[in-house]
Structure formats: structure tokens, C-alpha cells
Amino acid sequence: MKTYSATPADIDKKWIVIDAEGIVLGRLASIVATRLRGKHKPSFTPHMDMGDNVIVINADKVQLTGKKRDEHFYWHTGHPGGIKSRTKEQILEGAHPERVVFQAVKRMLPGNRLARQQMTNLRIYAGAEHPHEAQSPEVLDVKTMNKKNTRV
Image 1 (cartoon, rainbow, N blue to C red):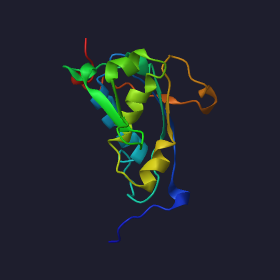
Image 2 (cartoon, one colour):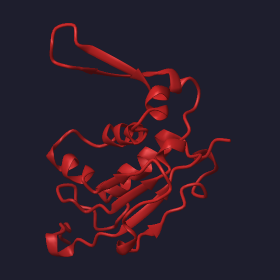
Image 3 (cartoon, rainbow, N blue to C red):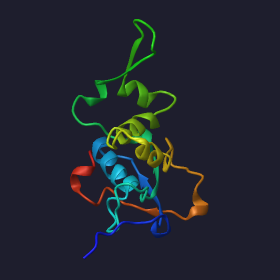
Image 4 (cartoon, one colour):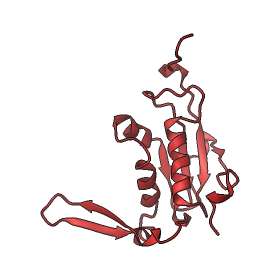
């Protein structure tokens, strides 16, 4: 018996829409990261970009449990004394609330070139509209997968 290894001709990418309204951020990010890598497919090959194209809508209505809204995202400008921070609540209420979901998904993927390539297959929108109707994406209902995925 030989080990199966997918080739670029074997890859079949689909388009998936996920509505993030009321879904817990970490659970949403883990589901999206799994779909981006392609680990949900039986033909998963670790060194190939096998994942689907994922569209996340209503990213500004994602839920955070506990005191996570008050936790900070930190980054450094590269200059001395240049550490900066914003709370997740400030980002969600600001001009680009989709960045919270983007960072959560990015940090659930490995830190290599393949993960950066897979992140290009992710599209996140703060509102309910997206410009990808021509691809006829399938709806993935994350709310019914597990009752813990939602927060009231």
C-alpha cells in the first residue's frame, strides 16, 4: 500500500460562506483555519494548498467570551519605544473590525510560506454583503455544528 500524495491536478477548491454573527471568535477561527488548510478533506496533503476559498461575512458581530474584549493586540513599529496596542473592542468598533477575525485565523495557521499563501484564500467582510456571488459559494452553517459555537 502506497501513501497518497496529492498533485496540483487533484486539488478541487470550493467557495464557502460563513456568517459570523453571534459566533464565538476562537471557534470560528479554528473552523476557518481547518477549511483553509484543507484538513477536512480525505485527500489532505500537508505540503499542498488544498483548502477552500472562505468568505466570512458579519465579522463585526463576532462574539468574545469572558474579558477578551478588553485584551490587547500588541505590535511594534520598529523604532525605539515603538510598542503600540489596541483592545479588541476598540478594533471591533473602529474602521476595520474584520482585522480581529483575520488575526485569529492567521495565528491558528503555521507560520510558514504555505500558510501565507493559504491566507490569500480568505475574504472577510464586516457587513452582510460580499462581491463573490459569481462563484456561487456554499453556505456553511457554523451555528448548528455545535451549540457552544454561539453566544447569546
